[in-house]
Image 1: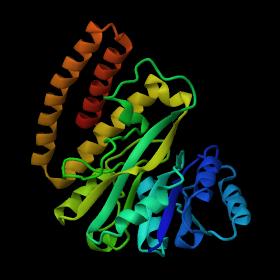
Image 2: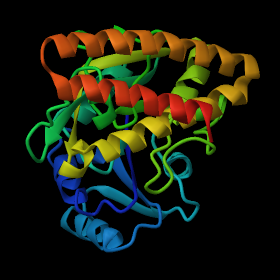
Image 3: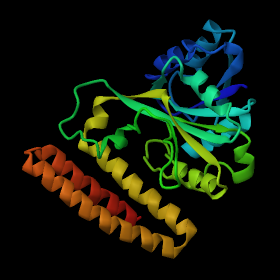
Image 4: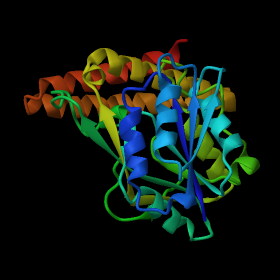
Length: 299
């Protein structure tokens, strides 16, 4: 069993070396994986960095591709078309992986009924932890941790984009990533992963949480600022609007109803933080919900 490692990148050459190093340090036989880098119109030396990686590691099958249509979903679909192996995992270009990451994925895929896998995503702060940091908003920075015990996801939850792996065959059955969704350049629009896993769940395929398949997500100082959280939240609301309207107007109205409920929960959480004198946390909880609602209601 072999696996394709797909890295879709836009303007992240600063982080690529640490990701390449983590791939080089895998405990898996190098004949059992390939690395596909899809460059989505990055300025700078992205291609040169990858060529250096190839030169230093001639025993790793490394494939460089360019995707000129701007957008993460386009780039991921390019990687799917390029992949030569029966498994594929997608890694963010500002992340790096545990040394047992690939071998752990292959171990779980030995179970024939497993279609997709998602693992832990832990945060690697480049600076001090922000004062607003809390368990309810950490996901905006890429954090995803469901504990240390493996389980099957249900249709109300799904793996996250910087740590998800699939049997490549599944894309022939359900289609690839929706290009109307997903990050476009620096625009933080999402929803493409949720849309994809909804299609997987409709087929009643098995999706597994793998706590030992660990990815570390880098958090630079600019991502700890409120401007980044605002951009993320607006993108979340906007992508939810597009995703729901693609299904039906009723689905969109249902999502607005859910947003009302989330406002109630957000107010309660903010009140608790205020009681504990965690002002920055309370403030960010409410601002985040406001920005998501704004993106959900307006283009």
